[in-house]
Image (cartoon, rainbow, N blue to C red):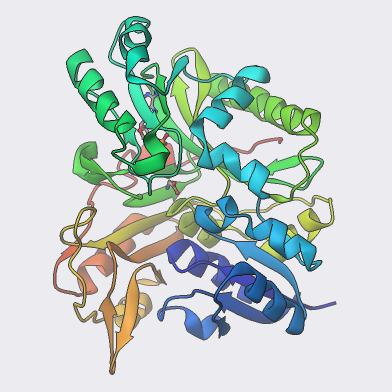
Length: 423
Ligand code: AMP
Ligand code: GLY
């Protein structure tokens, strides 16, 4: 039986999800809410004023499943609205979206369920600053409690810097979002993005991915939404066992809490020397991890989603080799990206190097496709020796102000092995 599906969200992540869904024999018709001009050809674009209107449209179009991409609609309760109309979603309810939209809520959840994470203090008044900082031996990380468009995490250089920035946060640097601040222990190690799907009873986990958050090579420059990704990531036997333990604990915690949603849980993890610790939760697919994952996924994504929405699981299969994604961004990103540059050679690069390009920030201007955001395109490939082809394609694709990292997947030994997880 075929179904109509709606994806919600504008960027490269949603392009990758929509592209993969569009290949499913279980799909009747795909609808796209908020798609950019680069991938609107994958379905019928649906405009809407608010989530009630979108749900009414979905009902009228016989849409049975909605896949919610970004954090904002989740935190605003889109899944709860769709539930009123009897439409199933892949996405957390507003209550559970708080694992991403409130760092304090996430920390309490982890503490309650003995999930390993950095030690922390919650600070909501300047009078608490000195006591809180005195509890750390190295300068702690500052995290605005609420959503701050990916900018709410600050790594201070020393205690004086921590004190000053904490005052700025509490003074409203990120508005309401930073009126409360999680002050947490600095952790050392390699980071890992682990994306799971929770069907209300069990979690099922995709292969681990790595994302490159800093703008420049060698992890220098400001934090960004992500400049590239690869999967699977090879991890040690020790960390793999710790990861398995963690996933079992996460599942148990959700069941204990009677969490009643079907959606994504992205665990941002730090592989420390003696544990696997949670840095953050996102209640959505990661961007650009999703682009690598979707390229590498052999199974039918829509079948995985339909199963999950019905409280079931089925095995997930992956391609051989490695999958990688390099983001082509625009000069000035992340602060003030240049927009409106004409983009050329995408199709030629896809044909010549066998890559797939997903569209993050683009729009049509007359006959041309132009850049329209910080992250513009994602150049991806899955298989063997993918890096060379991806980088040749990145050179070939042309727009004024193009910037990209040249060291994605640099540690080649890490991109060689499959890390299968039981959970
Ligand atoms: P988050 O948005 O919480 O993932 O934080 C953004 C980035 O800040 C992470 O990807 C890490 O690189 C860094 N970070 C966050 N928390 C910590 C921590 N406790 N120790 C060290 N680095 C951290
Ligand atoms: N790539 C990290 C994120 O999606 O938040």
